[in-house]
Image (cartoon, rainbow, N blue to C red; front, side, top):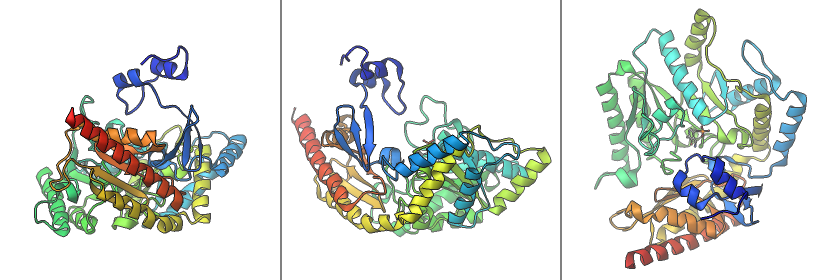
Length: 460
Ligand code: PMP
Protein backbone atom coordinates (compact mmCIF):
# COMPACT_ATOMS: atom_id res chain seq x y z
CA UNK A 1 0.00 0.00 0.00
CA UNK A 2 1.23 3.50 -0.65
CA UNK A 3 0.51 6.14 1.92
CA UNK A 4 -0.19 9.80 1.33
CA UNK A 5 3.16 11.61 1.69
CA UNK A 6 3.70 13.00 5.16
CA UNK A 7 0.38 11.57 6.41
CA UNK A 8 0.35 10.10 9.94
CA UNK A 9 0.24 6.60 8.38
CA UNK A 10 3.27 7.33 6.17
CA UNK A 11 5.21 8.76 9.11
CA UNK A 12 4.22 5.83 11.33
CA UNK A 13 5.49 3.32 8.78
CA UNK A 14 8.64 5.40 8.27
CA UNK A 15 9.65 5.75 11.91
CA UNK A 16 7.74 3.56 14.35
CA UNK A 17 8.72 -0.03 15.19
CA UNK A 18 5.56 -1.39 16.77
CA UNK A 19 5.49 -3.85 19.66
CA UNK A 20 3.84 -7.21 18.99
CA UNK A 21 3.45 -6.40 15.31
CA UNK A 22 4.65 -8.10 12.14
CA UNK A 23 7.03 -5.35 11.01
CA UNK A 24 7.02 -6.31 7.33
CA UNK A 25 3.23 -6.64 7.18
CA UNK A 26 3.01 -3.28 8.91
CA UNK A 27 5.04 -1.61 6.17
CA UNK A 28 2.35 -2.81 3.76
CA UNK A 29 -0.86 -2.24 5.71
CA UNK A 30 0.07 0.68 7.91
CA UNK A 31 -1.43 1.53 11.29
CA UNK A 32 -4.96 1.75 12.64
CA UNK A 33 -4.82 5.17 14.26
CA UNK A 34 -7.02 5.62 17.30
CA UNK A 35 -7.74 9.23 18.02
CA UNK A 36 -10.04 9.49 21.02
CA UNK A 37 -12.13 7.53 23.46
CA UNK A 38 -15.43 7.77 25.26
CA UNK A 39 -16.77 5.24 27.74
CA UNK A 40 -16.29 1.76 26.26
CA UNK A 41 -15.77 3.18 22.75
CA UNK A 42 -12.73 4.40 20.86
CA UNK A 43 -12.72 6.32 17.57
CA UNK A 44 -10.25 6.07 14.72
CA UNK A 45 -8.89 9.00 12.72
CA UNK A 46 -11.75 8.69 10.24
CA UNK A 47 -14.24 9.07 13.10
CA UNK A 48 -15.35 5.42 13.05
CA UNK A 49 -16.51 4.12 16.46
CA UNK A 50 -15.39 0.79 17.87
CA UNK A 51 -16.59 -0.91 21.00
CA UNK A 52 -13.33 -1.71 22.79
CA UNK A 53 -13.99 -5.28 23.90
CA UNK A 54 -10.42 -5.65 25.25
CA UNK A 55 -10.25 -2.44 27.29
CA UNK A 56 -7.07 -1.78 25.27
CA UNK A 57 -4.70 -4.46 26.52
CA UNK A 58 -7.01 -5.95 29.19
CA UNK A 59 -6.53 -2.82 31.22
CA UNK A 60 -8.58 0.39 30.76
CA UNK A 61 -11.09 -0.73 33.38
CA UNK A 62 -12.88 2.61 33.70
CA UNK A 63 -13.18 3.13 29.96
CA UNK A 64 -11.65 5.89 27.91
CA UNK A 65 -12.82 9.22 29.36
CA UNK A 66 -12.87 9.09 33.15
CA UNK A 67 -12.51 12.77 34.01
CA UNK A 68 -11.76 12.18 37.70
CA UNK A 69 -8.51 10.47 36.73
CA UNK A 70 -7.55 13.43 34.56
CA UNK A 71 -8.23 15.75 37.51
CA UNK A 72 -6.26 13.58 39.94
CA UNK A 73 -3.28 13.59 37.56
CA UNK A 74 -3.50 17.33 36.95
CA UNK A 75 -3.75 18.16 40.66
CA UNK A 76 -0.69 16.04 41.45
CA UNK A 77 1.26 17.44 38.47
CA UNK A 78 0.65 20.91 39.80
CA UNK A 79 1.64 20.04 43.37
CA UNK A 80 4.62 17.72 42.92
CA UNK A 81 5.06 16.35 39.40
CA UNK A 82 7.91 14.08 40.31
CA UNK A 83 9.77 12.80 43.25
CA UNK A 84 11.57 9.56 43.96
CA UNK A 85 11.35 7.12 46.82
CA UNK A 86 15.02 6.07 47.16
CA UNK A 87 17.07 6.61 50.31
CA UNK A 88 14.16 7.04 52.75
CA UNK A 89 12.35 9.65 50.63
CA UNK A 90 8.56 9.41 50.43
CA UNK A 91 5.49 11.32 49.33
CA UNK A 92 1.85 11.06 50.29
CA UNK A 93 0.45 9.49 47.10
CA UNK A 94 2.98 6.66 47.48
CA UNK A 95 2.30 6.16 51.18
CA UNK A 96 -1.48 6.28 50.72
CA UNK A 97 -1.39 3.86 47.82
CA UNK A 98 0.82 1.36 49.68
CA UNK A 99 -1.53 1.45 52.67
CA UNK A 100 -4.60 1.06 50.47
CA UNK A 101 -3.17 -1.95 48.61
CA UNK A 102 -2.25 -3.66 51.86
CA UNK A 103 -5.83 -3.10 53.07
CA UNK A 104 -7.22 -4.57 49.86
CA UNK A 105 -4.85 -7.56 49.61
CA UNK A 106 -6.49 -11.02 49.35
CA UNK A 107 -4.34 -12.37 52.22
CA UNK A 108 -2.45 -10.47 54.94
CA UNK A 109 0.41 -8.72 53.17
CA UNK A 110 3.22 -6.75 54.75
CA UNK A 111 4.84 -4.46 52.18
CA UNK A 112 4.39 -3.08 48.67
CA UNK A 113 7.15 -2.37 46.14
CA UNK A 114 6.21 -0.12 43.21
CA UNK A 115 7.26 -0.35 39.56
CA UNK A 116 5.86 0.97 36.28
CA UNK A 117 4.77 -2.12 34.33
CA UNK A 118 3.70 -5.72 34.76
CA UNK A 119 7.03 -6.88 33.36
CA UNK A 120 8.98 -4.78 35.85
CA UNK A 121 6.79 -6.05 38.67
CA UNK A 122 7.49 -9.67 37.77
CA UNK A 123 11.19 -8.94 37.25
CA UNK A 124 11.15 -7.47 40.74
CA UNK A 125 9.44 -10.61 42.03
CA UNK A 126 12.25 -12.73 40.61
CA UNK A 127 14.97 -10.55 42.11
CA UNK A 128 13.28 -10.34 45.50
CA UNK A 129 12.81 -14.12 45.62
CA UNK A 130 16.49 -14.66 44.81
CA UNK A 131 17.44 -12.07 47.45
CA UNK A 132 15.08 -13.72 49.96
CA UNK A 133 16.59 -17.16 49.45
CA UNK A 134 20.13 -15.81 49.58
CA UNK A 135 19.20 -14.06 52.82
CA UNK A 136 18.01 -17.38 54.19
CA UNK A 137 21.22 -19.12 53.13
CA UNK A 138 19.39 -21.20 50.52
CA UNK A 139 21.73 -20.27 47.70
CA UNK A 140 20.64 -23.11 45.39
CA UNK A 141 16.89 -22.42 45.72
CA UNK A 142 16.46 -20.06 42.78
CA UNK A 143 14.47 -21.69 39.97
CA UNK A 144 11.07 -20.44 38.87
CA UNK A 145 8.35 -22.64 37.49
CA UNK A 146 5.63 -21.04 35.38
CA UNK A 147 3.21 -22.58 32.89
CA UNK A 148 3.17 -23.18 29.18
CA UNK A 149 1.15 -20.28 27.72
CA UNK A 150 1.52 -18.28 30.93
CA UNK A 151 2.18 -14.57 30.32
CA UNK A 152 4.30 -12.59 32.74
CA UNK A 153 6.03 -9.93 30.68
CA UNK A 154 8.81 -9.30 28.18
CA UNK A 155 11.86 -8.07 30.08
CA UNK A 156 14.70 -10.61 29.99
CA UNK A 157 13.70 -12.38 33.19
CA UNK A 158 9.92 -11.92 33.02
CA UNK A 159 9.96 -13.11 29.38
CA UNK A 160 11.71 -16.21 30.69
CA UNK A 161 8.67 -16.80 32.90
CA UNK A 162 6.36 -16.23 29.96
CA UNK A 163 5.43 -19.43 28.16
CA UNK A 164 3.65 -18.18 25.04
CA UNK A 165 5.06 -19.26 21.66
CA UNK A 166 6.49 -15.99 20.32
CA UNK A 167 8.48 -14.75 23.30
CA UNK A 168 11.51 -17.05 23.28
CA UNK A 169 12.47 -17.82 19.66
CA UNK A 170 14.99 -15.33 18.34
CA UNK A 171 15.63 -13.81 21.76
CA UNK A 172 17.90 -16.52 23.24
CA UNK A 173 15.36 -17.11 25.98
CA UNK A 174 14.38 -18.47 28.43
CA UNK A 175 17.30 -17.94 30.79
CA UNK A 176 18.55 -20.99 32.67
CA UNK A 177 16.53 -21.76 35.77
CA UNK A 178 13.11 -20.97 34.28
CA UNK A 179 10.90 -24.03 33.70
CA UNK A 180 7.42 -24.34 32.23
CA UNK A 181 4.93 -26.90 33.46
CA UNK A 182 1.68 -28.13 31.88
CA UNK A 183 -1.13 -25.85 30.86
CA UNK A 184 -4.44 -26.46 32.67
CA UNK A 185 -6.67 -26.13 29.60
CA UNK A 186 -9.04 -29.06 29.96
CA UNK A 187 -10.72 -28.64 26.54
CA UNK A 188 -7.36 -28.90 24.75
CA UNK A 189 -5.29 -31.10 27.03
CA UNK A 190 -7.81 -33.21 28.96
CA UNK A 191 -7.51 -36.85 27.89
CA UNK A 192 -10.27 -39.10 26.58
CA UNK A 193 -12.47 -40.13 29.52
CA UNK A 194 -10.53 -37.99 32.03
CA UNK A 195 -12.71 -35.94 34.41
CA UNK A 196 -11.81 -32.29 35.12
CA UNK A 197 -10.92 -33.34 38.64
CA UNK A 198 -8.56 -36.06 37.39
CA UNK A 199 -7.10 -33.59 34.90
CA UNK A 200 -6.37 -31.15 37.76
CA UNK A 201 -4.72 -34.00 39.69
CA UNK A 202 -2.57 -34.80 36.66
CA UNK A 203 -1.54 -31.13 36.36
CA UNK A 204 -0.46 -31.11 40.02
CA UNK A 205 1.40 -34.39 39.50
CA UNK A 206 3.22 -32.88 36.50
CA UNK A 207 4.30 -29.98 38.69
CA UNK A 208 5.45 -32.32 41.46
CA UNK A 209 7.37 -34.39 38.93
CA UNK A 210 9.13 -31.28 37.65
CA UNK A 211 10.05 -30.15 41.16
CA UNK A 212 11.43 -33.60 41.94
CA UNK A 213 13.39 -33.78 38.68
CA UNK A 214 14.91 -30.35 39.26
CA UNK A 215 15.47 -31.03 42.95
CA UNK A 216 13.19 -29.28 45.47
CA UNK A 217 16.22 -27.55 46.99
CA UNK A 218 16.65 -25.68 43.67
CA UNK A 219 13.03 -24.57 43.13
CA UNK A 220 12.16 -21.20 44.65
CA UNK A 221 8.77 -20.19 43.32
CA UNK A 222 5.81 -21.00 41.11
CA UNK A 223 4.07 -18.13 39.32
CA UNK A 224 0.63 -18.22 37.74
CA UNK A 225 -2.12 -15.97 36.55
CA UNK A 226 -5.37 -16.93 38.32
CA UNK A 227 -6.96 -17.08 34.88
CA UNK A 228 -4.44 -17.07 32.04
CA UNK A 229 -4.98 -14.05 29.83
CA UNK A 230 -2.67 -13.64 26.86
CA UNK A 231 -2.26 -17.43 26.61
CA UNK A 232 -5.91 -17.61 25.55
CA UNK A 233 -8.12 -16.93 28.60
CA UNK A 234 -7.62 -20.34 30.18
CA UNK A 235 -9.91 -20.95 33.15
CA UNK A 236 -8.39 -23.70 35.31
CA UNK A 237 -10.47 -26.62 36.64
CA UNK A 238 -12.16 -25.89 40.00
CA UNK A 239 -9.68 -27.76 42.21
CA UNK A 240 -6.54 -26.97 40.19
CA UNK A 241 -4.97 -24.35 42.48
CA UNK A 242 -5.87 -26.26 45.64
CA UNK A 243 -3.91 -29.24 44.32
CA UNK A 244 -1.06 -27.11 42.98
CA UNK A 245 -0.66 -25.26 46.28
CA UNK A 246 -0.55 -28.54 48.21
CA UNK A 247 2.46 -29.53 46.08
CA UNK A 248 4.14 -26.13 46.59
CA UNK A 249 3.70 -26.38 50.36
CA UNK A 250 5.22 -29.84 50.40
CA UNK A 251 8.44 -28.59 48.80
CA UNK A 252 8.58 -25.13 50.37
CA UNK A 253 8.05 -23.35 47.05
CA UNK A 254 6.55 -19.83 47.08
CA UNK A 255 3.23 -19.16 45.34
CA UNK A 256 3.28 -15.99 43.25
CA UNK A 257 -0.05 -14.73 41.89
CA UNK A 258 0.29 -12.64 38.75
CA UNK A 259 -2.80 -10.43 39.08
CA UNK A 260 -1.75 -8.08 36.27
CA UNK A 261 -4.96 -8.85 34.33
CA UNK A 262 -7.16 -10.52 36.96
CA UNK A 263 -6.75 -7.94 39.74
CA UNK A 264 -9.27 -5.18 40.52
CA UNK A 265 -12.57 -6.88 39.76
CA UNK A 266 -11.99 -8.46 36.35
CA UNK A 267 -13.05 -11.99 37.38
CA UNK A 268 -16.00 -10.96 39.58
CA UNK A 269 -14.02 -10.71 42.82
CA UNK A 270 -11.59 -7.98 43.72
CA UNK A 271 -8.69 -10.38 43.07
CA UNK A 272 -8.49 -13.32 40.69
CA UNK A 273 -6.84 -15.19 43.57
CA UNK A 274 -10.20 -15.09 45.36
CA UNK A 275 -11.99 -16.48 42.30
CA UNK A 276 -9.70 -19.50 41.96
CA UNK A 277 -8.58 -20.06 45.57
CA UNK A 278 -4.97 -18.86 45.50
CA UNK A 279 -3.28 -17.84 48.76
CA UNK A 280 -0.24 -15.99 47.41
CA UNK A 281 3.03 -15.37 49.20
CA UNK A 282 3.73 -12.67 46.63
CA UNK A 283 1.32 -10.84 44.32
CA UNK A 284 2.06 -8.66 41.31
CA UNK A 285 -0.46 -6.24 39.82
CA UNK A 286 -0.55 -3.43 37.24
CA UNK A 287 -2.93 -2.40 34.43
CA UNK A 288 -6.30 -1.73 36.16
CA UNK A 289 -4.45 -0.43 39.24
CA UNK A 290 -4.59 2.94 37.48
CA UNK A 291 -7.17 1.96 34.86
CA UNK A 292 -3.98 2.22 32.76
CA UNK A 293 -4.26 5.99 32.49
CA UNK A 294 -0.68 6.15 33.72
CA UNK A 295 1.87 3.34 34.08
CA UNK A 296 2.17 1.89 37.56
CA UNK A 297 2.52 -1.61 38.99
CA UNK A 298 3.06 -3.13 42.39
CA UNK A 299 4.46 -6.19 44.13
CA UNK A 300 3.03 -7.20 47.50
CA UNK A 301 4.67 -9.69 49.82
CA UNK A 302 3.79 -11.40 53.07
CA UNK A 303 5.74 -10.67 56.23
CA UNK A 304 7.46 -14.07 55.98
CA UNK A 305 8.91 -12.94 52.66
CA UNK A 306 9.60 -9.37 53.77
CA UNK A 307 11.53 -10.08 56.99
CA UNK A 308 14.57 -11.87 55.48
CA UNK A 309 14.68 -9.25 52.70
CA UNK A 310 14.69 -6.45 55.28
CA UNK A 311 17.47 -8.14 57.25
CA UNK A 312 19.58 -8.69 54.13
CA UNK A 313 19.18 -5.04 53.11
CA UNK A 314 20.43 -4.07 56.57
CA UNK A 315 23.39 -6.47 56.31
CA UNK A 316 24.27 -5.27 52.80
CA UNK A 317 23.65 -1.62 53.64
CA UNK A 318 20.84 -1.05 51.15
CA UNK A 319 18.18 -2.89 49.15
CA UNK A 320 19.95 -2.56 45.81
CA UNK A 321 16.84 -2.44 43.67
CA UNK A 322 14.53 0.38 42.60
CA UNK A 323 13.38 2.40 39.63
CA UNK A 324 13.45 6.14 38.95
CA UNK A 325 9.68 5.84 38.63
CA UNK A 326 9.00 3.54 41.61
CA UNK A 327 5.78 5.00 43.08
CA UNK A 328 5.84 7.96 40.67
CA UNK A 329 3.61 10.46 42.50
CA UNK A 330 1.39 11.31 39.52
CA UNK A 331 0.85 7.62 38.69
CA UNK A 332 0.23 6.86 42.36
CA UNK A 333 -2.32 9.69 42.63
CA UNK A 334 -4.18 8.33 39.59
CA UNK A 335 -4.07 4.80 41.04
CA UNK A 336 -5.47 6.05 44.34
CA UNK A 337 -8.29 7.84 42.57
CA UNK A 338 -8.97 4.69 40.51
CA UNK A 339 -9.27 2.61 43.69
CA UNK A 340 -11.56 5.26 45.19
CA UNK A 341 -13.80 5.08 42.13
CA UNK A 342 -13.90 1.27 42.31
CA UNK A 343 -15.11 1.53 45.89
CA UNK A 344 -17.60 4.37 45.39
CA UNK A 345 -19.15 2.76 42.33
CA UNK A 346 -18.87 -0.76 43.73
CA UNK A 347 -17.14 -1.92 40.59
CA UNK A 348 -16.95 -5.54 41.82
CA UNK A 349 -20.72 -5.46 42.44
CA UNK A 350 -21.20 -4.06 38.95
CA UNK A 351 -19.07 -6.83 37.41
CA UNK A 352 -21.10 -9.41 39.34
CA UNK A 353 -24.32 -7.80 38.09
CA UNK A 354 -23.43 -7.73 34.38
CA UNK A 355 -21.23 -10.86 34.19
CA UNK A 356 -24.21 -13.25 33.84
CA UNK A 357 -25.25 -11.39 30.66
CA UNK A 358 -21.67 -11.32 29.40
CA UNK A 359 -21.21 -15.06 29.99
CA UNK A 360 -24.67 -15.94 28.65
CA UNK A 361 -24.01 -14.07 25.41
CA UNK A 362 -20.47 -15.49 25.18
CA UNK A 363 -21.62 -19.07 25.73
CA UNK A 364 -24.46 -18.59 23.21
CA UNK A 365 -21.76 -18.11 20.55
CA UNK A 366 -20.80 -21.72 21.28
CA UNK A 367 -23.66 -22.68 18.95
CA UNK A 368 -21.92 -21.00 16.01
CA UNK A 369 -20.50 -23.52 13.52
CA UNK A 370 -16.99 -22.08 13.96
CA UNK A 371 -16.86 -22.14 17.75
CA UNK A 372 -15.43 -25.15 19.59
CA UNK A 373 -15.28 -23.79 23.12
CA UNK A 374 -16.36 -20.70 25.04
CA UNK A 375 -14.89 -19.98 28.45
CA UNK A 376 -14.84 -17.18 30.98
CA UNK A 377 -15.35 -15.75 34.45
CA UNK A 378 -16.59 -12.32 35.40
CA UNK A 379 -15.86 -9.96 32.50
CA UNK A 380 -13.07 -12.10 31.07
CA UNK A 381 -13.94 -14.47 28.27
CA UNK A 382 -12.88 -16.14 25.06
CA UNK A 383 -14.12 -18.32 22.26
CA UNK A 384 -12.00 -20.81 20.36
CA UNK A 385 -12.52 -21.25 16.64
CA UNK A 386 -12.17 -24.82 15.37
CA UNK A 387 -12.40 -26.51 11.99
CA UNK A 388 -14.36 -29.45 13.41
CA UNK A 389 -16.48 -29.09 16.52
CA UNK A 390 -16.78 -32.85 17.08
CA UNK A 391 -13.07 -33.62 16.96
CA UNK A 392 -11.91 -30.17 18.19
CA UNK A 393 -9.53 -30.13 15.21
CA UNK A 394 -8.12 -26.64 14.67
CA UNK A 395 -7.87 -24.91 11.32
CA UNK A 396 -4.56 -25.00 9.50
CA UNK A 397 -2.77 -21.94 10.97
CA UNK A 398 -2.23 -20.77 7.37
CA UNK A 399 -6.01 -20.28 7.06
CA UNK A 400 -5.71 -17.49 9.65
CA UNK A 401 -9.20 -18.15 11.04
CA UNK A 402 -8.68 -16.06 14.17
CA UNK A 403 -7.21 -13.18 12.18
CA UNK A 404 -10.17 -13.30 9.78
CA UNK A 405 -12.63 -13.06 12.68
CA UNK A 406 -10.58 -10.25 14.22
CA UNK A 407 -10.59 -8.29 10.97
CA UNK A 408 -14.30 -8.85 10.37
CA UNK A 409 -15.00 -7.67 13.93
CA UNK A 410 -13.11 -4.44 13.28
CA UNK A 411 -15.16 -3.88 10.14
CA UNK A 412 -18.29 -4.17 12.28
CA UNK A 413 -16.89 -1.64 14.78
CA UNK A 414 -15.61 -4.07 17.40
CA UNK A 415 -12.06 -4.40 18.70
CA UNK A 416 -11.26 -7.86 20.09
CA UNK A 417 -8.00 -9.75 20.46
CA UNK A 418 -7.08 -12.79 18.41
CA UNK A 419 -4.66 -15.20 20.05
CA UNK A 420 -4.16 -17.73 17.29
CA UNK A 421 -7.73 -18.91 16.72
CA UNK A 422 -8.93 -17.81 20.14
CA UNK A 423 -10.85 -14.55 20.36
CA UNK A 424 -10.65 -12.81 23.73
CA UNK A 425 -13.02 -10.32 25.38
CA UNK A 426 -12.19 -8.23 28.44
CA UNK A 427 -14.22 -5.04 28.05
CA UNK A 428 -13.90 -2.07 30.39
CA UNK A 429 -15.49 -3.02 33.71
CA UNK A 430 -17.99 -0.16 33.34
CA UNK A 431 -19.71 -1.85 30.39
CA UNK A 432 -23.50 -2.14 30.64
CA UNK A 433 -25.83 -4.89 29.44
CA UNK A 434 -26.89 -3.21 26.21
CA UNK A 435 -23.23 -2.63 25.31
CA UNK A 436 -22.54 -6.29 26.08
CA UNK A 437 -25.35 -7.19 23.67
CA UNK A 438 -23.91 -4.85 21.05
CA UNK A 439 -20.49 -6.43 21.48
CA UNK A 440 -21.70 -10.00 20.98
CA UNK A 441 -24.14 -9.05 18.17
CA UNK A 442 -21.16 -7.65 16.30
CA UNK A 443 -19.04 -10.69 17.11
CA UNK A 444 -21.76 -12.98 15.77
CA UNK A 445 -21.73 -11.10 12.47
CA UNK A 446 -17.93 -11.23 12.43
CA UNK A 447 -17.98 -15.00 12.90
CA UNK A 448 -20.49 -15.32 10.03
CA UNK A 449 -18.17 -13.26 7.83
CA UNK A 450 -15.15 -15.34 8.86
CA UNK A 451 -17.04 -18.56 8.11
CA UNK A 452 -17.99 -17.28 4.65
CA UNK A 453 -14.38 -16.27 3.97
CA UNK A 454 -13.02 -19.63 5.15
CA UNK A 455 -15.54 -21.51 2.98
CA UNK A 456 -14.64 -19.38 0.00
CA UNK A 457 -10.93 -20.03 0.53
CA UNK A 458 -11.56 -23.78 0.86
CA UNK A 459 -13.62 -23.79 -2.36
CA UNK A 460 -10.93 -21.90 -4.29
N1 PMP B 1 1.52 -10.32 33.53
C1 PMP B 1 0.35 -10.51 32.90
C2 PMP B 1 -0.62 -11.51 33.42
C3 PMP B 1 0.06 -9.75 31.76
O1 PMP B 1 -1.09 -9.96 31.12
C4 PMP B 1 0.98 -8.80 31.31
C5 PMP B 1 0.71 -7.93 30.09
N2 PMP B 1 -0.32 -8.28 29.29
C6 PMP B 1 2.18 -8.66 31.99
C7 PMP B 1 2.41 -9.43 33.11
C8 PMP B 1 3.23 -7.69 31.54
O2 PMP B 1 2.80 -6.41 31.74
P1 PMP B 1 3.44 -5.17 30.92
O3 PMP B 1 3.00 -5.32 29.49
O4 PMP B 1 2.83 -3.98 31.62
O5 PMP B 1 4.90 -5.24 31.10
